[in-house]
Length: 287
Ligand code: PMP
Image (cartoon, rainbow, N blue to C red; front, top):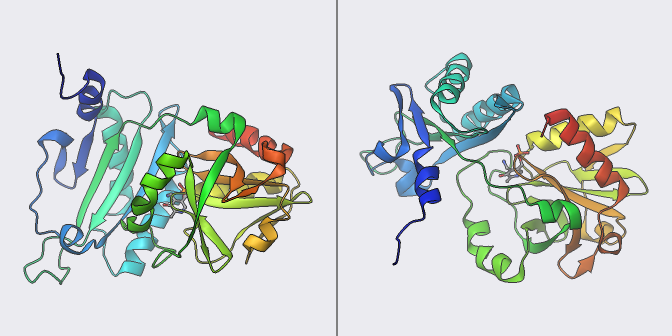
């Protein structure tokens, strides 16, 4: 017998809720008009965070970044930070999930002339988390390379066109993520930040990237472990000298990278500095 959907996918879908300033409803019952600038023009921002032990991880940092993204996009969030913090609490209470991913979304809003943003729409979705890539944590992952810099790199826009377009190749080649660079100057992953380790010093791009919250935590943890961190221009040429490399991100945590394009890093196995930071992150987050 053929089944359209597995029971787990139906359950997972039922475990999604959406909060708006008007209240909370199951995502399945939730309807919005189509004439939103996000739908017509891709105009919108979001932020994404998760729980560890049912506690939102670094929520103040995510709220800060969400408000900053809105400001840089010329959008106003129609709620105070306190209201969003309360929304997180209410969604936590509503959800049956053990751990939750939260997606705060601000769209350009409904438009009459298909260009002007008048009243941005604010949503917060609670959803199941993807499984961690445990094989990747143990063995390291390989990355695809692409010459690209995100438009408005400091803003967490909803535009992931470039990454989604390259996804079939990643799936085919079993590549975990794409690493963006601009003519050899390394930027970030499509959903993560990139670090390399040379002679025990950590290097990560200082500009042209989204300032990840996990990136921030890793910089704090590295400093507390006595490791030097340089946030500056980094290049693919320098990557050729790297002893180790890793990605950071909300659902990526600290992911060892053992191959970028055709270049193998650290003999193809995760290195000691990366392992130390993976352990430090797990201890800090409780995950
Ligand atoms: N860069 C981009 C473009 C991203 O989408 C993300 C994921 N939010 C990151 C970096 C990593 O940020 P974070 O550590 O806050 O998840």
